Image (tube, rainbow, N blue to C red; front, side, top):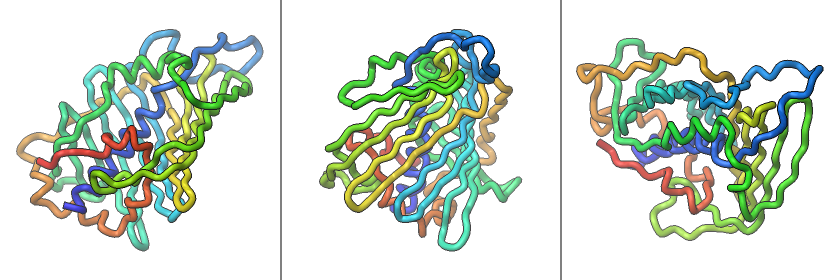
Length: 263
Protein backbone atom coordinates (compact mmCIF):
# COMPACT_ATOMS: atom_id res chain seq x y z
CA UNK A 1 0.00 0.00 0.00
CA UNK A 2 2.86 2.41 0.81
CA UNK A 3 4.39 1.78 -2.61
CA UNK A 4 1.03 2.42 -4.24
CA UNK A 5 0.69 5.66 -2.28
CA UNK A 6 4.19 6.65 -3.39
CA UNK A 7 3.21 6.22 -7.04
CA UNK A 8 0.02 8.17 -6.39
CA UNK A 9 2.14 10.88 -4.81
CA UNK A 10 4.33 11.07 -7.88
CA UNK A 11 1.31 11.54 -10.11
CA UNK A 12 -0.23 14.06 -7.75
CA UNK A 13 2.95 16.14 -7.81
CA UNK A 14 3.03 16.21 -11.59
CA UNK A 15 -0.65 17.18 -11.59
CA UNK A 16 0.09 19.87 -9.00
CA UNK A 17 2.86 21.26 -11.17
CA UNK A 18 0.44 21.46 -14.09
CA UNK A 19 -2.11 23.21 -11.88
CA UNK A 20 0.50 25.66 -10.60
CA UNK A 21 1.05 26.86 -14.14
CA UNK A 22 -2.51 28.01 -14.68
CA UNK A 23 -4.05 29.30 -11.47
CA UNK A 24 -2.88 32.90 -11.02
CA UNK A 25 -1.45 34.83 -14.01
CA UNK A 26 -2.20 38.33 -15.33
CA UNK A 27 -2.55 39.75 -18.81
CA UNK A 28 0.05 42.29 -19.93
CA UNK A 29 0.47 44.76 -22.81
CA UNK A 30 1.19 43.53 -26.36
CA UNK A 31 4.79 42.94 -27.35
CA UNK A 32 6.53 46.32 -27.89
CA UNK A 33 8.10 46.91 -31.29
CA UNK A 34 11.69 45.92 -31.82
CA UNK A 35 11.67 42.93 -29.41
CA UNK A 36 12.23 39.33 -30.42
CA UNK A 37 9.02 37.52 -31.32
CA UNK A 38 7.26 35.74 -28.47
CA UNK A 39 7.16 32.05 -29.52
CA UNK A 40 4.24 31.17 -27.22
CA UNK A 41 1.62 33.74 -28.27
CA UNK A 42 -1.95 32.41 -28.37
CA UNK A 43 -3.73 35.49 -29.74
CA UNK A 44 -6.44 35.18 -27.12
CA UNK A 45 -7.42 31.60 -28.02
CA UNK A 46 -7.12 28.76 -25.48
CA UNK A 47 -4.36 26.35 -26.49
CA UNK A 48 -5.34 23.01 -28.00
CA UNK A 49 -2.23 21.37 -26.54
CA UNK A 50 0.68 22.21 -24.26
CA UNK A 51 4.07 20.61 -23.56
CA UNK A 52 5.70 21.32 -20.20
CA UNK A 53 9.02 20.46 -18.56
CA UNK A 54 8.53 19.76 -14.84
CA UNK A 55 11.10 19.41 -12.05
CA UNK A 56 10.31 18.62 -8.41
CA UNK A 57 13.05 18.59 -5.80
CA UNK A 58 13.50 18.53 -2.03
CA UNK A 59 16.13 19.68 0.38
CA UNK A 60 16.97 16.03 1.01
CA UNK A 61 18.22 15.62 -2.55
CA UNK A 62 15.19 13.94 -4.14
CA UNK A 63 14.63 15.25 -7.67
CA UNK A 64 11.90 14.16 -10.07
CA UNK A 65 11.92 15.34 -13.69
CA UNK A 66 9.14 14.97 -16.23
CA UNK A 67 8.10 16.06 -19.69
CA UNK A 68 4.34 16.39 -19.78
CA UNK A 69 1.96 17.07 -22.65
CA UNK A 70 -1.76 17.70 -22.44
CA UNK A 71 -4.31 17.56 -25.24
CA UNK A 72 -7.16 19.80 -24.12
CA UNK A 73 -9.40 18.72 -27.02
CA UNK A 74 -9.26 14.99 -26.18
CA UNK A 75 -8.85 15.57 -22.40
CA UNK A 76 -5.78 13.36 -22.24
CA UNK A 77 -2.38 13.85 -20.61
CA UNK A 78 0.85 11.92 -21.16
CA UNK A 79 4.16 12.21 -19.31
CA UNK A 80 7.63 10.73 -19.29
CA UNK A 81 8.74 10.80 -15.66
CA UNK A 82 12.27 10.19 -14.39
CA UNK A 83 12.08 9.05 -10.76
CA UNK A 84 15.22 8.89 -8.57
CA UNK A 85 16.07 5.68 -6.77
CA UNK A 86 19.08 4.74 -4.62
CA UNK A 87 21.96 4.99 -7.12
CA UNK A 88 20.23 5.71 -10.42
CA UNK A 89 16.83 6.70 -11.81
CA UNK A 90 13.84 4.88 -13.24
CA UNK A 91 11.65 6.20 -16.04
CA UNK A 92 7.89 5.83 -16.35
CA UNK A 93 5.52 6.46 -19.23
CA UNK A 94 2.19 7.79 -17.92
CA UNK A 95 -1.14 8.41 -19.65
CA UNK A 96 -4.25 9.96 -18.07
CA UNK A 97 -7.65 9.54 -19.71
CA UNK A 98 -11.22 9.54 -18.35
CA UNK A 99 -10.23 9.29 -14.69
CA UNK A 100 -7.75 6.47 -15.22
CA UNK A 101 -3.97 6.60 -14.99
CA UNK A 102 -1.89 4.13 -17.02
CA UNK A 103 1.76 3.55 -16.11
CA UNK A 104 4.53 1.51 -17.69
CA UNK A 105 8.31 1.43 -17.45
CA UNK A 106 9.79 3.56 -20.23
CA UNK A 107 12.39 0.82 -20.76
CA UNK A 108 9.76 -1.71 -21.85
CA UNK A 109 8.30 -1.38 -25.34
CA UNK A 110 5.76 -4.20 -25.30
CA UNK A 111 5.13 -4.85 -21.63
CA UNK A 112 1.76 -4.41 -19.91
CA UNK A 113 0.39 -1.08 -18.75
CA UNK A 114 -0.71 -0.88 -15.11
CA UNK A 115 -3.79 1.17 -14.31
CA UNK A 116 -5.24 2.95 -11.32
CA UNK A 117 -7.98 5.50 -10.69
CA UNK A 118 -6.61 9.06 -10.66
CA UNK A 119 -8.52 12.30 -10.88
CA UNK A 120 -7.14 15.17 -12.96
CA UNK A 121 -7.53 18.94 -12.93
CA UNK A 122 -10.26 20.28 -15.20
CA UNK A 123 -8.36 20.38 -18.48
CA UNK A 124 -10.68 22.83 -20.24
CA UNK A 125 -10.43 25.18 -17.28
CA UNK A 126 -6.65 24.87 -17.33
CA UNK A 127 -6.52 25.75 -21.02
CA UNK A 128 -8.31 29.02 -20.23
CA UNK A 129 -5.90 29.76 -17.37
CA UNK A 130 -2.90 29.17 -19.61
CA UNK A 131 -4.30 31.73 -22.06
CA UNK A 132 -4.93 34.78 -19.92
CA UNK A 133 -5.76 34.20 -16.24
CA UNK A 134 -6.72 36.96 -13.84
CA UNK A 135 -3.96 38.12 -11.50
CA UNK A 136 -6.61 39.51 -9.17
CA UNK A 137 -7.38 35.96 -8.07
CA UNK A 138 -4.21 36.02 -6.00
CA UNK A 139 -4.79 37.27 -2.48
CA UNK A 140 -2.86 37.39 0.77
CA UNK A 141 0.60 37.48 -0.85
CA UNK A 142 3.23 40.18 -1.12
CA UNK A 143 3.68 40.81 -4.85
CA UNK A 144 6.54 42.17 -6.94
CA UNK A 145 6.59 42.60 -10.72
CA UNK A 146 9.53 42.77 -13.14
CA UNK A 147 9.74 42.94 -16.93
CA UNK A 148 12.42 41.82 -19.38
CA UNK A 149 11.76 41.91 -23.13
CA UNK A 150 8.34 40.40 -23.75
CA UNK A 151 8.38 38.49 -20.43
CA UNK A 152 6.71 39.72 -17.25
CA UNK A 153 7.51 37.91 -14.00
CA UNK A 154 5.33 38.04 -10.89
CA UNK A 155 6.74 36.96 -7.53
CA UNK A 156 4.31 36.18 -4.71
CA UNK A 157 5.64 35.56 -1.19
CA UNK A 158 3.93 34.64 2.04
CA UNK A 159 5.06 33.51 5.49
CA UNK A 160 3.28 31.43 8.13
CA UNK A 161 1.65 29.09 5.61
CA UNK A 162 0.48 25.68 6.87
CA UNK A 163 2.51 22.98 5.09
CA UNK A 164 2.49 19.20 5.37
CA UNK A 165 4.14 16.18 3.78
CA UNK A 166 2.28 14.97 0.69
CA UNK A 167 2.20 11.39 2.04
CA UNK A 168 1.63 12.18 5.71
CA UNK A 169 -1.15 10.07 7.29
CA UNK A 170 -4.59 11.72 7.50
CA UNK A 171 -4.86 13.96 10.51
CA UNK A 172 -1.13 14.71 10.68
CA UNK A 173 -0.19 18.09 12.07
CA UNK A 174 0.95 20.81 9.68
CA UNK A 175 3.99 23.01 10.22
CA UNK A 176 4.33 26.68 9.43
CA UNK A 177 6.58 27.67 6.57
CA UNK A 178 7.02 30.14 3.75
CA UNK A 179 5.88 30.09 0.12
CA UNK A 180 7.54 31.86 -2.81
CA UNK A 181 5.62 31.60 -6.10
CA UNK A 182 7.29 32.93 -9.26
CA UNK A 183 5.18 33.11 -12.43
CA UNK A 184 6.30 34.33 -15.85
CA UNK A 185 4.02 35.27 -18.73
CA UNK A 186 4.61 36.28 -22.34
CA UNK A 187 3.63 39.25 -24.43
CA UNK A 188 -0.10 38.45 -24.42
CA UNK A 189 -0.32 37.14 -20.86
CA UNK A 190 0.13 33.48 -21.79
CA UNK A 191 1.83 31.32 -19.15
CA UNK A 192 5.49 30.58 -19.89
CA UNK A 193 6.95 29.35 -16.58
CA UNK A 194 6.24 28.95 -12.88
CA UNK A 195 8.22 27.95 -9.78
CA UNK A 196 6.80 27.21 -6.33
CA UNK A 197 9.24 27.05 -3.38
CA UNK A 198 7.98 25.92 0.03
CA UNK A 199 10.22 26.01 3.09
CA UNK A 200 9.96 25.02 6.71
CA UNK A 201 12.70 25.02 9.33
CA UNK A 202 13.75 21.48 8.39
CA UNK A 203 12.45 20.87 4.85
CA UNK A 204 12.16 22.45 1.43
CA UNK A 205 10.29 21.56 -1.77
CA UNK A 206 10.66 23.24 -5.17
CA UNK A 207 8.22 22.62 -8.04
CA UNK A 208 9.09 24.24 -11.35
CA UNK A 209 7.33 24.06 -14.70
CA UNK A 210 8.36 25.58 -18.03
CA UNK A 211 6.12 25.68 -21.09
CA UNK A 212 8.02 24.26 -24.06
CA UNK A 213 5.31 24.77 -26.67
CA UNK A 214 1.64 25.39 -27.34
CA UNK A 215 -0.55 23.93 -30.10
CA UNK A 216 1.90 21.30 -31.31
CA UNK A 217 0.49 17.88 -32.34
CA UNK A 218 -0.22 15.66 -29.31
CA UNK A 219 -1.86 12.41 -30.47
CA UNK A 220 -2.01 10.73 -27.05
CA UNK A 221 -3.08 7.09 -27.32
CA UNK A 222 -4.88 5.21 -24.52
CA UNK A 223 -3.52 1.68 -23.96
CA UNK A 224 -5.96 -1.03 -25.11
CA UNK A 225 -7.79 -3.00 -22.44
CA UNK A 226 -6.01 -6.17 -23.55
CA UNK A 227 -2.66 -4.60 -22.59
CA UNK A 228 -3.57 -3.36 -19.09
CA UNK A 229 -3.41 -4.85 -15.61
CA UNK A 230 -4.49 -3.60 -12.20
CA UNK A 231 -1.74 -1.74 -10.38
CA UNK A 232 -2.38 -3.83 -7.27
CA UNK A 233 -1.18 -6.93 -9.17
CA UNK A 234 2.02 -5.36 -10.50
CA UNK A 235 5.53 -4.64 -9.39
CA UNK A 236 5.73 -1.21 -11.02
CA UNK A 237 5.42 0.69 -7.74
CA UNK A 238 8.44 -1.23 -6.43
CA UNK A 239 10.82 1.03 -8.34
CA UNK A 240 9.73 3.85 -6.00
CA UNK A 241 10.46 2.02 -2.75
CA UNK A 242 13.65 3.95 -2.02
CA UNK A 243 12.37 7.44 -2.85
CA UNK A 244 11.94 9.74 0.14
CA UNK A 245 8.48 11.07 -0.74
CA UNK A 246 7.85 11.97 2.90
CA UNK A 247 10.04 15.06 2.43
CA UNK A 248 7.83 16.49 -0.33
CA UNK A 249 5.79 19.41 0.99
CA UNK A 250 2.48 20.82 -0.20
CA UNK A 251 0.23 23.50 1.28
CA UNK A 252 -2.23 21.78 3.58
CA UNK A 253 -5.13 23.24 1.60
CA UNK A 254 -3.88 21.43 -1.56
CA UNK A 255 -3.04 18.10 0.05
CA UNK A 256 -6.19 16.51 -1.40
CA UNK A 257 -4.31 16.34 -4.72
CA UNK A 258 -2.27 13.53 -3.17
CA UNK A 259 -5.25 11.32 -2.46
CA UNK A 260 -6.23 8.60 -4.91
CA UNK A 261 -8.03 5.32 -5.05
CA UNK A 262 -6.29 2.19 -6.27
CA UNK A 263 -8.15 -0.01 -8.73
